[in-house]
Length: 366
Image (tube, rainbow, N blue to C red; front, side):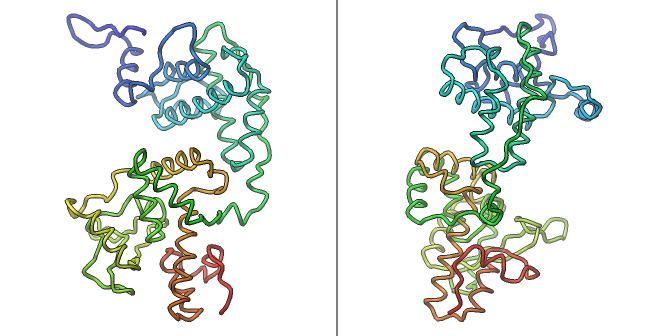
């Protein structure tokens, strides 16, 4: 491993590169920082080493962005989020190259046709915007790699073709996704309980309330109002917070809304989540992205990822909506009132009418 040298007198790092490496060790798990110079490094290791070397925390993002707009591209990576995205993409691409092209051992041997075939594979389940983002990742990785490995001269830029997305051939299915089967949901919860416990809890919250990912991640103990009966007599969830005297929702559009807890078992579930937590403490300590990421990885392991094209939590919202619709129908609630209840529980604005909620459920008149 490359050494990090410190000044004996001052006790500080002696170069900008060393400061950057220290920063990398602080913000990323140890196993994720690859700076090993052995002979048997994988493609993923080689790409990640180049990306880590070009990470420049504290660099002027605005200046770099203006240079890129004027055609002056740079290998520097100033932003943490962009750095993390590049590392994740490089790992995914490297693993794919290892599986599909085992004869390729060094980055310099990756041709642009290999990159295009990778995008062709991704086109089966990625939107056009995502594929364009991946093309920009390839371009940035090319600059990082050419800078880091002085003997490498990749020429991917300008030759990478963004394929048509198979996912966008049916606009309605892309927008609203596929309703998750309850049997698949049970499998996800069982598997994720050990590996992704917080994502599993997020999925259960969505299945009980129909929340979006940001709602599941943002609910605090104070938002759970079991003392207020609500429509079903089991309590309410108030999906909003008050800051500086202003009320703001924690979900899409910032609209405050109230969700009714539908069943007694759901009330018990939320009471358990609130135990030991302060009023402002979140029920689960992770972000919306982390919930979706945990669910995607779980679904991939279970072999059901391809069944649900959109964000996995959205498919769970569709499942919740159908189960709510069926329960209200069985309870004798009228067709129009059922539409209104489902629409409100999903958090759709009144201006949309009922067309949005009808895309989530089989809402044949009765």
